[in-house]
Length: 162
Length: 162
Length: 162
Image (cartoon, chains in turn green, yellow, purple):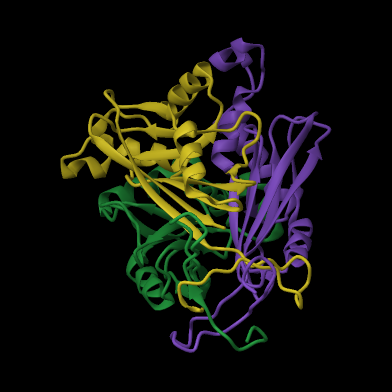
């Protein structure tokens, strides 16, 4: 009965009521993006929400991260004025030009500033899944942030829970 | 026996010794804050630690995130001089005034700087739970960071593990 | 039979096909570092990858965080020119001197700048584990970032999954 085929979903009569045996589930998805310009932000919340639905996870965690080191995944407001402000601000904190100011660019790249901007905006977000849905605040939206576009790049969505 | 009532916590005799069957548990809690001023930091470590205890999770992860996009959750020192330094530094990197310098503020808000400051300090922390407790370093304390207060805001604590 | 000793790995015949019962596994490891100078970056990817292998986790999450508040764990490129650029940039955004400019340093410390730099670079990364391996992009490398060295410090690696 216990040798490979039997099944049990159960509550534990000798445990506290909160102890419920649950199934671990996971989902892995790679999203592809190609931004036409050097920089841009894309709201990926609907895509991530759909993956959560498909995962069947009711309670868990959803990791969303850029797989490239000149891009970010972050959570903030879907408001174009704010996105403009981010653009101006990041350019001030880590200017693209003069590209010769960065030692990294001696490798033949011109994207050192993108590696810096991405550290400000972050690589990843971890979002709770509650009752089968992304547990986001009222204005929280998940963005892909590109700082060195004009080529294909990936975002990883990893969902784990029960 | 396996139909809804029975219980088992077991080691697998035909698995490697490290394979232990464990119960997935989760806990979700929303904490509310209202800071009287525009900015402020609150040490929420004792509250999070108590939620970990209540969750019954022995080994797992604890996500703590701001649910609002002008606030942060971060880990650093509980030292008032440092908090003053953060305040001065963030105001230098992303000044509140002149509010007209930000396009976001044309929406009627005056909090564009708060959206920027929060990106520096971060949205969330993920803390390990080991032997039933937050696995924090000697000086690590979890803070709620408010950059546009004077209204109620939430922090989400999501605990998952076994 | 279910009272402490028996074992079961099973599929559930009355669940949906995607519902597979899996073993929750976890691994906790503390890594120690002592950087001879005040600042430095160390590529810890091979160490973390080996811990993932040892954990036996096929699908899960790997948290890697600094346990000290003047250090970072971050993901970026293993390119010495870029690391030089980070050093110059962080020193510009949060200069070490004059140390008297920071109120935190009145406590007898001279490391206030390190607490600021670490917020830019971040405390932690969460990396997906897929098919038993760190699910990293082509250039993603995990670094320990030290901003106030010359003493022993720890990094926590917490792996959870199935």
